[in-house]
Image (cartoon, rainbow, N blue to C red):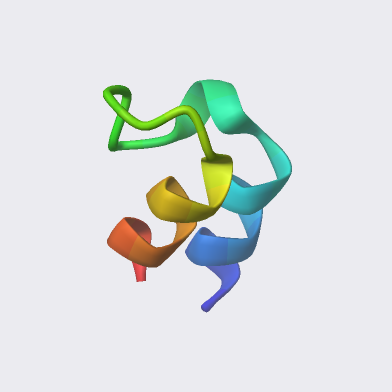
Length: 30
């Protein structure tokens, strides 16, 4: 959960770089 929050906070750390929304990265991280 913490990892997801960190990714939500920083779009640059999003795993899903293909997505514009950092939220997608947060979901992927979780």
